[in-house]
Length: 237
Image 1 (spheres, rainbow, N blue to C red):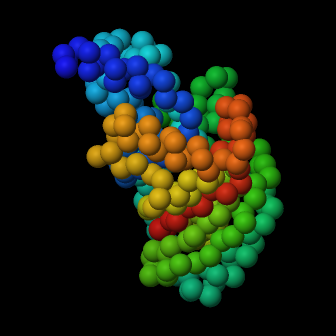
Image 2 (cartoon, rainbow, N blue to C red; image 1 turned 90 degrees about the horizontal axis):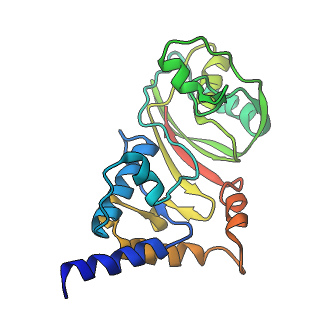
């Protein structure tokens, strides 16, 4: 079989794929960087050469269901395990939360994080209702602690940790964060690591992941189903 023919068939298969699948995002990369790398890998495997970055984005459309920070640091001082466990109860259920200034939320069409990087003054967005289904302390080794959070859409873990610190009359921020579940997708069972980012692997993953949705659902429904309020995160703070 000629190389060109193989590339053509791979490209045909790649551009026929449609649906939802899960990938693993390693620490140190932004969500956007992971998507760009995945797109480059797939286009290269399919033999599709697109030099212009704008056209490359248009050639293969891939999006994500929720941004994860590339990295963070954390600190907590003079707090007992009992103090922390008691405070967590205040952040369970339906609560009001102010989104962090450094976020993907927009002002005048630009992300707040972009404005912050340019040194522009940014005002906090108003507090909004969010839901925390469960919040538990997993480990406590001062100055670090580990939480397990099951939350709804629009929830910011960074705001949660900051608010916990303020409630304890100190400060706290995230050192590590791992999303262990998003909708029906779990980290252990569904997330494709980088060594499996191939057209065939993604095709198999799509078939498996799409079977998790009951009945015949349209792509419009997928958009509302995926951010359903079952995003579980495990963090070390």
